[in-house]
Image (cartoon, rainbow, N blue to C red; front, side, top):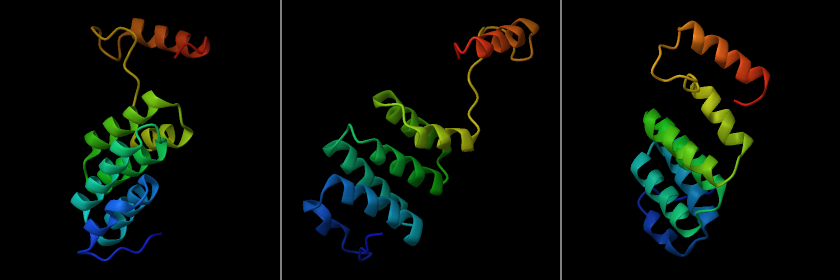
Length: 125
């Protein structure tokens, strides 16, 4: 991982988006500097919005900071760009469930259960 001085994050302005993203994740994980980590990852996304790694790092920073909702939104934004197994696994670790087939009915309604199982068997879900 990249070694960044705690108070010298601003000197990374000329770095590549990959380096910014990695440094952001490293700062959050190793130094618990979540705000700086988020800022660096968001800057990396602004510079290179098609790179899935930046969304993965930003989502993980949000998880480390305890912001589960933001992490989920970030992982989903990355999945809109491209299906990536790492993002899917992160969402699975969090425990995200798909919405029931009929949202107006309760999750335990027989119609939702049977339809959900049928859609799963047909691989439409």
